[in-house]
Length: 316
Ligand code: FES
Ligand code: FES
Image 1 (cartoon, rainbow, N blue to C red):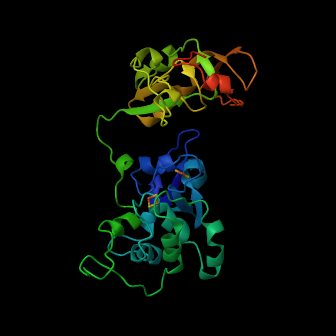
Image 2: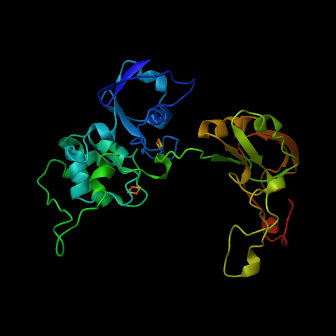
Image 3: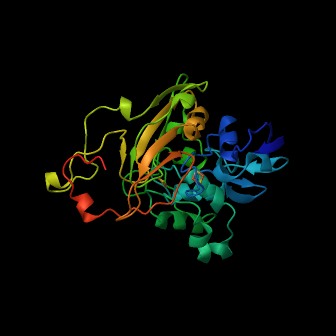
């Protein structure tokens, strides 16, 4: 398959089901950030033939013969594009993790669309700046703003030192640093709100090439802790282990896979079988069953007051 990234030709063979984000990062495009990986945050935004989309939920195969543009293709730290320059001038970021995706989406907007900004930018979330400065950055793109620089000093806004690299997607974040020999850990979480795990069969997962270790409650330290500490110490008993055999909320950690790559660590998730006794909502009895981590079942997480008041270590 052939396509272009920022006008550079690329030849690649995506794996079945591979998303565009992983393909781009595997070819060195770390300006495409890995955020939620679920199509929610927009950190991975790119343009495909000029249309902004979330590359983490976009099949890589679909870019065959098409043009992909990343934040790095909109400008360089020495020659920023208008939107990138405006984000620097208006301090449209703090940590900057969302910014490469923000500028990609914002680069497609025209002045007459500004009144509709919240809807048009709803696919790009920022966890730290607040949206006022982002709105000002997008609204001010191309305007003659007060371009602050480190040399202005007292009485003037001082631009973020890494700002020009941030808006061009060139500032590396933790996941953008590939250290040789790094192992990757994927946590497998419960799809049930309330269950007791009878056993976990990890043999198939552990046998996969590239899997270094699969951890379960059998490997967890025997120090229990509370997941909710309130003013009264005994309101919230120490009743949880790092990896527990009792599940009390959907999403609770159940097992962890350590592997040589993220892809390998994620692969065994459907191979770990977990026989359980599952509980539904208030008043429902136990039901034997099992789940694999690829299965998400609907549950009704309504604990009774009696259950909440149980003494220190409840196995149910
Ligand atoms: S990483 Fe793609 S939308 Fe969050
Ligand atoms: S600037 Fe930190 S997430 Fe947006």
